[in-house]
Length: 267
Image 1 (spheres, rainbow, N blue to C red):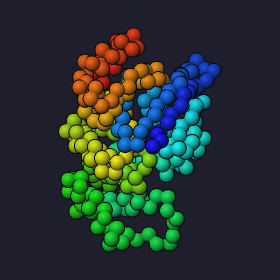
Image 2: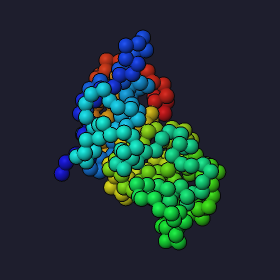
Image 3: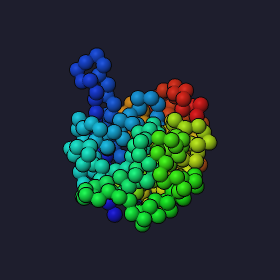
């Protein structure tokens, strides 16, 4: 069985030739097996979100290759990569249409990539399917299908976005600090829902987080980034036995710097 994701020495520099030139990715390489759930940590400017944006096609890399399930998507425009990817952003407002109902949002996600006909109405069968999926969230949303998404709390909205992102069983699920804007209790709930959805759909996932405890507690593999490259990659039993102090020590050992990201250390 081949890799679900292959990142081969990708480079990305912003504002080339100016005083603001920034090397964001400096030869980053990463292979993910099908079903890997990888958490990504690192200081501000380490390249975490830049790597996710490169995979999603928000911008093209300067060099290197990105291959998803055997298909080289390096030069595909962002909209043509959507069939391979699901994504949940930090801002709960981003992944849904606020003025549309829960069921309308879910219908859009369910029909993504399908040929558009004249018929828009949501059938009884579809509605029952959405209810069953929402019931699994244990948030009471199965009785609120006609509620506008803009009226939901941030946590409820992220949970719906997760359902929508996973609905078409994407090759890769990208979670870009998707709990950072939530209070700790709600964040924990959304992370539990993330675990459940990833496991049920047997998805391959990448999750950027600033919370070291969450990075250790979730997923089967953890990578640490620094200055646009991966400096630490741990999985299995070794990952399960990690403590935050181990990660801080590893960062200092590999990078030669002291971890100066207060937000991450305080998480």
